[in-house]
Image 1 (tube, rainbow over the protein chains, first blue to last red):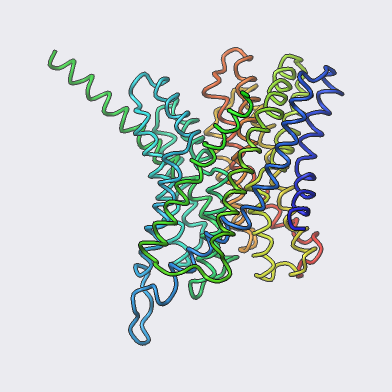
Image 2 (tube, rainbow over the protein chains, first blue to last red; image 1 turned 60 degrees about the vertical axis):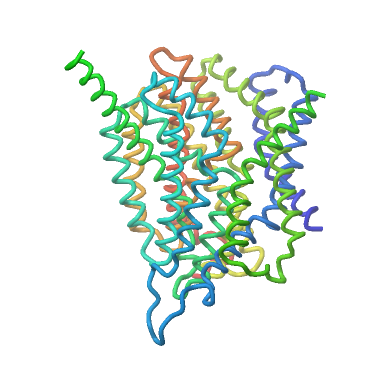
Amino acid sequence: MNLFVTFWGTLLDILPIATIIFGFQYLVIRKPVKRLGQVLTGFFMVWVGLSFFLVGLEQALFPMGELMAAQLTNREFLPSLAEGAQRHWSDYYWVYIFAFAIGASTTIAEPSLIAVSLKAGEISGGTIDPLMLRIAVAIGMAFGITLGTWRIVMGWPLQWFVFAAYLLVIVQTLRSPRSIIPLAFDSGGVTTSTITVPIIAALGLGLATEIPGRSPIMDGFGMIALACLFPIITVMGYAQIAQWRAARQSAARVSNP
Amino acid sequence: MGFVASLVNQSKDSLRDLAPVVLVMAFFQLVVIRQPLPDSLALIDLVLGLVFVVAGLTLFIKGLELGLFPLGENLARAFVKKGSVTWLLVFAFALGLGSTVAEPALIAVASRAAEVVAQGGLIDSSVEAQNSFAFALRMVVAVSVGAAVVLGVVRIFKGWPLHLIIIAGYVIVLLLTLLAPAEMIGIAYDSGGVTTSTITVPLVTALGVGLASSIKGRSPMLDGFGLIALASVMPIIFVLLFGIIGLQFLPGVAP
């Protein structure tokens, strides 16, 4: 029953893009579609695949993220609290470690990031090391998520963090080599894949539900936003360091030949 | 035979995407938390769900590569060659809109957001109210991505520098945040990251790169990517606006 409802729903989700593509193809460009059978098979696979993915998401990824949030903030799991004492934010250290581990591990092996970083290494002519670039993105992503969990624990407004990150992005943009800027902005989007987004969302909402004094609606969102912003900052930071080191090396070569 | 082999390859990629999540979680479960799973979560259900995720993602991505991507890229090239700016902009808008509606991460997060908003009392807790909120949120995001792609195409034509537009976008976000209802701020910020995943990025990048390489003086590297950056700022602006002026038109919204 659940599967049937999902199949019907995803059919409606795919309908717009199918209508747009075929509509433009036949009404505006007015050329027949090459290999129509293959294309239709593809659309059918997209439909079935999307339905299965969403069912699996509800059954596994969302519950797992929420379970981790609940267990890591459980009273018996946290360090014991003296009578009447306030809980300190550092008591939740396992939450931060978990967030960092999830962010770094999902990003460092991301196939699209590997492809992009190899390309960037080629274009830069050796000043950018692909592996270092991947590490920069992974650290940015992991830091963004960890900061997001810390914000939920503290209950501070999301906009403070986002505006501070915006400020850093703007300052970095004005100082970075121009060729790295689009890549840096792109790396923010690359990190948030279809699998990581639901996990992060579930973790944030779970934390905001479990931690006393926080509400899911006010505090539960924002981790995805921070996870997208900090890779931009770390990639531009790495590009500046790489540029500075390349400049220093060539200066050294000039001074003692 | 080649088809089966490529399907196997793709499922390996999907598994590799999922593996770090599962490994980190398993490590925490076995080493740090050391507690049995609660009764509501049977291990077999979880494993089955993960199999669904991998199988679904594999079919989805392979299907995109067979059908949507080649067709979309051909169309983008045809529209660039056709030379009609109006049609190109209409196509750009429709492409951004249509691909965002089918974006899996957005479908999942929008329905979760609707539940949370209902619990928070901003809308009715009835299923209809939640569904209409999730639908409206997705449409707002889809329209905003369409608008972002149009803006990005105009930018490539005019050669406006990307970072100035992004900074202007940030300033608008800042101003709207001051006006928006507090409950919508987190959802709005997150909607920017949700849009840029499986479908939208390849289709929109194909349009940008195709366009940038056909106009003299534009570099595909510098100008092709800009569309994605815009597509992650514009949804924030539109969802904040939706929170300020659009919310009251939904059924089941508490006055």
